[in-house]
Amino acid sequence: MSDQPNGSHLSVERAGEVATLVLNKPASHNAISLDMYRDLPALARELDDDSAVKVVVVRGAGQTAFASGADISEFERVRGNAETAKVYNEYVAGAEQALEAVRKPTIAMVHGYCIGGGMGLALSCDLRFSDDRGRFAITPAKLGLVYSLDSTKRLVDLVGPSRAKWVLMSGQQLDAAEAHRVGLVDEVTTPDALEKHTYDFAELVATRAQFSVRAAKQIVQRIVAGQVVDDDASIALRNGSFDTDDYAEGVRSFLEKRPPRFTWS
Image 1 (cartoon, rainbow, N blue to C red):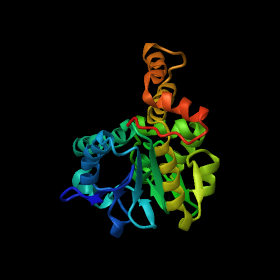
Image 2 (cartoon, rainbow, N blue to C red; image 1 turned 135 degrees about the horizontal axis):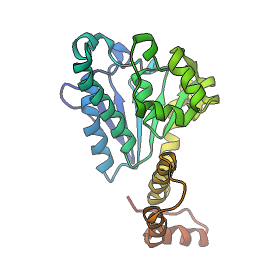
Image 3 (cartoon, rainbow, N blue to C red; image 1 turned 180 degrees about the vertical axis):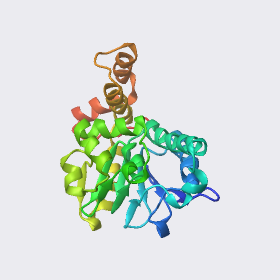
Image 4 (cartoon, helix red, strand yellow; image 1 turned 30 degrees about the vertical axis):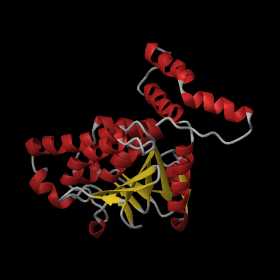
């Protein structure tokens, strides 16, 4: 099933417990326009609130690009000076933050180019799977722009400060193999295998205990944000798992030597 907001180049497809958010502008290699940044948060929240969805895949239409970057053809109109750029940048930040805030696992599936604004969205996902033609770059130094602190932190968290400086200062592309080596990409496959590999993994995660999956995401986010010891919230999260039906089912299925049938959503 697919739906698309009026006037937007975003679409949503649902198949079982996995939903796909598509950057749907193939004529421009899925360059991200202002309306796409504007509309993305509502779609992200909709998928997050849909109890039938357990994993979200983010991809570009076709197999040429995840996203070739922000739509620079708009810049003189929507990002022509500091005043208009402030509004534009707020939409970008809102889209990236909305993806990052999804409580369910999110996977960026990257065919080909993932540049600039495309990288911003991919970095906001939990995982990044790429085909071996993948090309990754963040290019503010080629345009005279400054990358946001939030987006820069996501990059630093993955590749470290020195490599992040290399990426940002040079604007050079990393191929998929190098991106995987430095931790920017989690898995690399051939172009023909990428879609199956990504959705097989998404469907696997959808079979796991969802309370555990989402709690793991929360705890990792807390650690990345600087938390190093348990507090009341993290302790409550851990202890709360023992009151779920899925915990009882997990123990029971192990003892009965059968696959678990988890129901929490």
